[in-house]
Length: 129
Picture 1: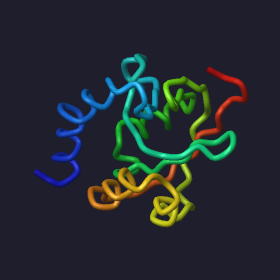
Picture 2: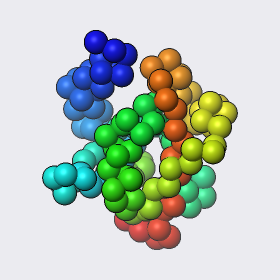
Picture 3: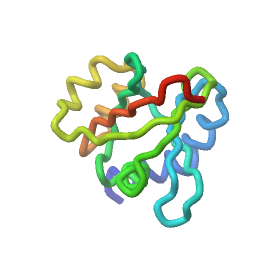
Picture 4: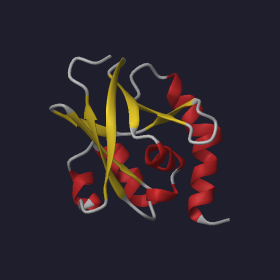
């Protein structure tokens, strides 16, 4: 089993179900490209003004990135509050440098586990919840 499949299986069946229950875990909600249902993924990142930045460890192979490509309208839960936004993939951004500006614990995990880093910027709607 390759690294991505192993990590993804662990996240899907163990890590994500636990993290989604934490009221202050940052969550990204996308719309499933096939099902049309909301899909919530625990992520790490940082809000900078009206933008939220994070790095995907498997780039365009991540299911939530594929969902964003199909429909960039997302919601992000920050500190227990939901914000609407539009996600933009930023392949020209230096994802390793970006990780240095994001929360350390998550960034370390993304660096170690990631195989195809991709920066994502979410434009948060002013005053949205």
